[in-house]
Image: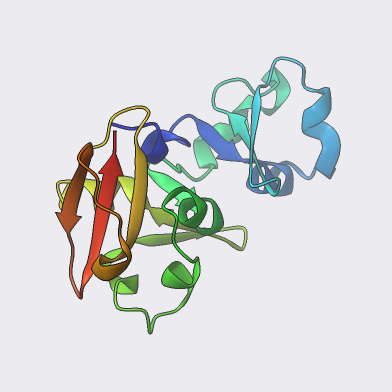
Amino acid sequence: MSNLPNTLNSFWLWREVSKKLGVSNPAYKYWKKTPNLKLNNKYIFLQKETLPQKHAHIEEILTDLSGHLPIKYASDQLHVNDHLFLSEKMKLHKEFEYKFVEDVKFVNIKKFFRENGIMVTKNSIVQLGKIKDLDLLGSSSFYNLKNDYGIVVYD
């Protein structure tokens, strides 16, 4: 499966880590053995099992984000307006599972892909949208979803 739904499988949300530890915002920058990931120049994540030893105890109470993505990043990667994940009035909104962590809304992309039989390779580009707006090419796979929506996977 694509890296997209697995992006955060081995990361913690920095905002949650800093709040639970009571440390200042830039503290992670001084943790040389703790790799971090930044998405959309907004969300910072720290790799699991790499926190400094004196803070490692916190990992057991942090929120697992496996299969989840922040809605802004998910919408960018699926080439769809983030309104789809924000508004309950959108037809596909209820098809996704959501989770809030420290006021950041996450969407479970992995579960959505699995439930809809959507298969993507490592370097695939995925586009979600109304069927009439999707571009179908010879090297793409089309998945029909509910309410006139579909997904195209470009290999």
